[in-house]
Image 1: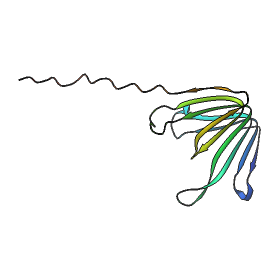
Image 2: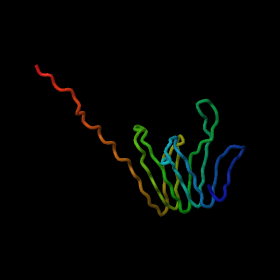
Image 3: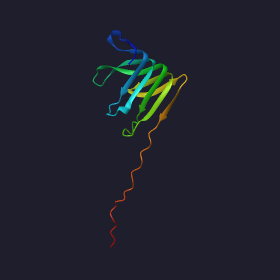
Length: 141
């Protein structure tokens, strides 16, 4: 969403989208919870795209970078690939500029520039399972 948009589409291939005036870009993971919405906002937001070839040999447009400038803010969720069932870490950042690099349609890194602040919250480790108190009684001769 924004007050105005500019799209670069040379030879009918999307390479860049620029949003001006109260710009915001959102994305949602493939889950049923609304809490997993990542977003980036600023006075301007620019999304850059590359052409990738999928496993079937088809060319696809993939987003590779999102930039916000001027009162930039971003909220991102970071999942541990080895523990997919664990809740994500959550990062909220503010700054003069924010750049989000993506790899395989997932957040790879977030860089905040200029005057900046934010918070990064790691999930609480899972509690160990309770001890099994329903063990069978010992049989004595």
